[in-house]
Image (cartoon, rainbow, N blue to C red; front, side):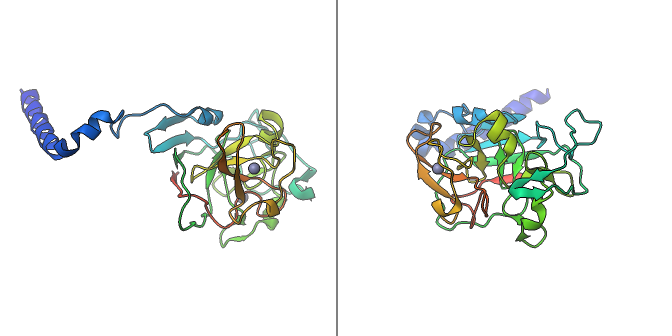
Length: 259
Ligand SMILES: [Zn+2]
Ligand SMILES: [Zn+2]
């Protein structure tokens, strides 16, 4: 029977693996989880309510989302229940000017470090997703494609909740996600995470003080305690002034995103 042969092969493989790992057996016995197992997702991440799935391998948290906003938008097709026309003033006092794109379902996988660490060299952020908001919508940096043009030309196309889709229909926020800061949470609440695992907060501190870019370092963050992190943590803030959410790259060592 083929299963006998298979079992024999597996057995030999185990013996071989056992030989390799014998020197660090004690360590393996102490470890709670082999690399393939999942461990509990820390509670703070349960705030990412837009995730389709979330798993923790002990090193990286893997978050899968469809990237669809859970709020009304002028960029949904008109037959979508979440479609709502919009005209008027958007972010920064700009008069809304719709871009030609329409929101489309995405397949995004964010892998972010569960224990974020400061990077010795602060990698630049790329165009495209650099983080994930609580509702599963990707966060983008302060530049517009394709050549890192300043964002100012795009701001007028932000919808009623300050997001917009790019050419392939991927909806995203470059600035304060208004639905999260006014409906889901507050101006001082946790808004999401960048790929380096450090959290992103709204444009106010819990004290109610408005945060401006000059309060922050060049990566657009600083360190202090928050309700979610009583021991203190480095965090980014959305601000009304440029660069809006992230400055000169990631503060920490970034994970990855695939789409
Ligand atoms: Zn954009
Ligand atoms: Zn802060």
